Every structure is written in structure tokens, then in C-alpha cells.
Image (cartoon, rainbow, N blue to C red):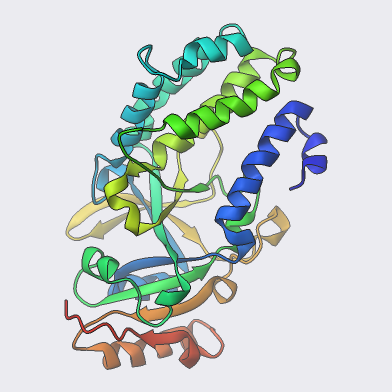
Length: 323
């Protein structure tokens, strides 16, 4: 959405700030040309394609259940009075009460961020990995025979609240923490100081709060940087209704609640390319002794799902590694 379009629905200074963020996001997504990959077991990949849906799992069930706590802890550090960013002083200079209002809202939702948020994880897919995948991901994700599902990113370009889900690339941080990211955002606010003064405190604090939630859910230690992770998430902390189907399923012997998103035509809601045919770029069969059997099976699975030219969309990784 261009700044001129945003001016019709947002106050002008907010439209300009939002445009900066949208342009940054569009570049991250290579304007819809960036592809993403989900590494998983062959059985889970089969389920995704046959049922034409992905499952969002509770953050407490992630590989590292401390991941969201890590993002929250880094935010707390950045907003502390000892932080060199001096966030409290800068936000109060923009609008009296902004710091306290925003942090009060954020603190009230920390429990839900930690326990009632659902996430689906992917990685950026590189062109050089088209026929082999990424060795570290084959080693790290999925049990038994492994498969990578590569998808197109056009739906992620949409600016729509219809599904009640949101996505961002993961920020990998070291000792500097979130300093640079938060500093950049506050500088954008400071440029618009004159225009922000007339806006309602609740409106401004709500806008800033949403930025903090996004950071909390997409921040990891830079030791994981090679994963190039991108997250899609649903959280009650945003206060938006979602269109995901809640189910109780058995995963590795553990009954748990998940939220399922069906692939489909959501064009009328401003989301393009979310049907399986449009989404699916390719499937890569991971290194194993049974690659040819799995290859034949996935060609058939794609055909049965209505995917055209299915033989041309399934590849066998040539990495000489056996799980």
C-alpha cells in the first residue's frame, strides 16, 4: 500500500511512518519474489499437502520454548532506565505519558505472549538451495525421512487483518540487543514529532505496543542466524479475531491444541496467492536411503492435490548425507 493510500485511513504522520515500515518489509520479501521453506518430516509434509493446511503450534511447544521469553527479556533490557537508548525520556518528549501507557499495555499481555501465542516457522529459501536444500536444516528439523516444502511469498505481501495472523522475519541479535532496531523506529517517530502531538495518547501507545509485540515474537540469539527464519503468528495480544481452526492433535505422543490455516482463495479479502497451486514452488526430498520411494510418493501426492506438472516440482537432494 502506498503512502497516498494510507493517508486516506491513517493520520498523515502515521501514514508516513507506516510507509517506511512497509517499504522495508517489501524489500525483505524481495517484493513478493522471496521464497520460503518449511523443513519437516515426510509424514508432516504429506499431511500439509493432502489436507491443504498448515498448523500453528503453541510457543510452549517450540523446539526452544525459551525463544519468546528471550525476545521479551531483550525488550525489557532495552526499555530499562539503564539503557543507553533513554527510551523513556525520548517517548515522553514525543507525548506525555506515552512510555508508561505503552509499557503498561505490554506488561499486561506478557503472560499471553508466553503461553497463548501460536506460530508457524519457515526459513528464507536461497536460489542456490533449489536442488539440495540446506544441510543444517536437514539435520535440525523433522524426524526420520525429511522433506522441504518451498512456497511463494505473495500472500505475505498482503496488508489484511482478515485472517488475524501476522508475519515478520526474525531479528538475530548479539550483545547490542535490540538497540539498533528500536532506535531506528523511535527516530522515525521523532521526525514526525510535530504531527504526533495532536494525536490521542491511546492511539499512539497502541501503535507502539504492536511494534513491541512483533519484536517480542521475532527476536532470537544470533547463534541461530543461519536459519534465516520467518515467522507467521497468531496472538490474542493484538486483539483481532482470527480465522484459524482450533484442533486437539497428537504430535509425537503429546496431545496438544493447534490452530490450522487452510490454503484457499482469499483474494476478496486482499490476500492473493494463498491457494496450494499458487503457493507451492517445489518439494525437495531430503537425504535418506529411501529418496526414490519418497520421490514417487510425493509426485503422486501432488497430482492427487491437483498440482499441475507435479513431476517437475519434486526434487531429490543430492547432499551426500544420511540422517
